[in-house]
Amino acid sequence: PDSLAPPRPAVTATRIPGASYSSLGGKKSTGNKEADLHQQLHEDMTTEILQMAKGLKQNALKFTAKLETQSGALEEAEGHLEANVASAQARNKQAKVFYKRNWATGCKSWLILILVLCIVPAVYIAIKMSYFVGYSNKKLEL
Image (tube, rainbow, N blue to C red; front, top):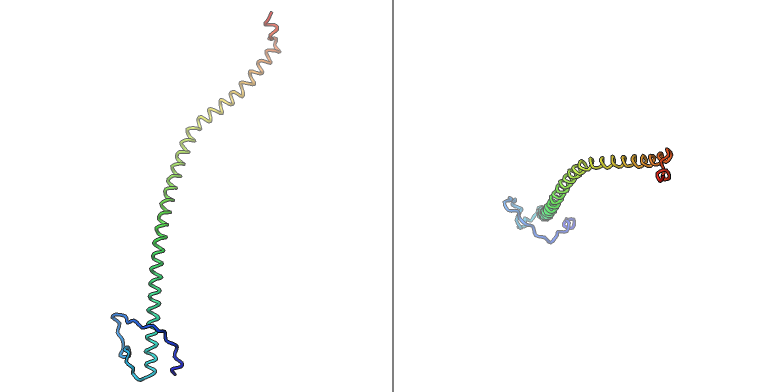
């Protein structure tokens, strides 16, 4: 029966403060091999549970630290984003003011351009018509 028992790790079990243990919990040999085997299995499982609890606690602490780091980065990115949105809104207001102010100037420019495009051909036509009507340089010299 002893050869069927799993190999024991060379780790000592730590007692949990405030926990109650049965009369088999000590290191006294009861003489009963089965009870000793159960006691040893209980101690081994307790040791493994403690090691897993320590690992879980370390992982939780690492996870908490990483979350705090990412939370800080997230808050920083959120601040930058809010600043960018405010800047974009201010630029949009400036563009609207600029557009409204320049709309009238743009319309005036187009009207002047159309007027010039109408006057230049009219003057050209008037000059050509005056030539056909009989006003020319030769008649004015007489």
